[in-house]
Image 1 (cartoon, helix red, strand yellow):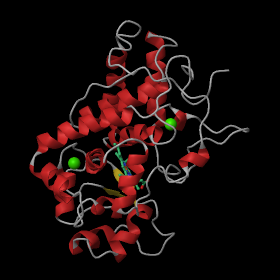
Image 2 (cartoon, protein in one colour):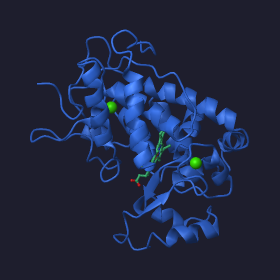
Image 3 (cartoon, rainbow, N blue to C red):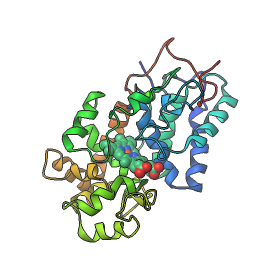
Length: 298
Ligand code: HEM
Ligand SMILES: [Ca+2]
Ligand SMILES: [Ca+2]
């Protein structure tokens, strides 16, 4: 039911407004582009693309922000607030927070030189969030095997091809030492000099340097390109889950294709983002259009 033209009459300026906020946020800090793209992913995988991730905890309810995959990790909520308040100024009560996440994901990728796609719109916002669902493993952990990755994506209606293309989002952004420590000290399917250089800023004992950051992409950390796949072929995937995509299994050939042919990656990524954005949206009279993305309307 989602359609790219959903706001063409009710809020024709929405893309311009989102773009200007995202461009200045990314100009200030390039990493923010990745952080915002990830918010849409973590929203969509937990009960669909319904803005649930954005709800703050209250005394009577705990939302998704402190769930294991999100806690101390997801970021960019202030930028989403900024987008929302500027959109509210031009079209009050019209554009959902779930759609703002979807448009912000596109604008973030564009700001870092990535491909475009026709974002489908018309999602409505949830009136609740689910800590339990966010903790249930629907968002795959960084130690996932290839079969777990394929299964997690299949569970939300996405193919293995979508999974490989969407993982290409790790061409930008940063990860914390806790997410890649086990890999750089224990794994054998890793380039030795890459492991060594990552170890220099991620000490072995857990509890020391846990939040130290490393770029996902050793070559072009803030450029949205296909170098993620080239890195995998040279065993420079940062997470175990990244390297799983090129480890002698069924997805090796797609990784090789995307590394050789940037256009085929762009096309696949764009299609997969549209598919991800279609996960179980609230539409029609379900949900609401939140006034403030952090809380349900009163
Ligand atoms: C395939 C399964 C995936 C796994 C296991 C995974 C895991 C992770 C982990 C562990 C981090 C680092 C978090 C931290 O250290 O705080 C991360 C960051 C990130 N992920 Fe993924 N991810 C996956 C798929 C995706 C998808 C589908 C997207 C978007 C389309 C995405 C976009 C990002 C971005 C951009 C970052 C960097 C965020 C920042 O710098 O703030 N990831 N991911
Ligand atoms: Ca959600
Ligand atoms: Ca890159």
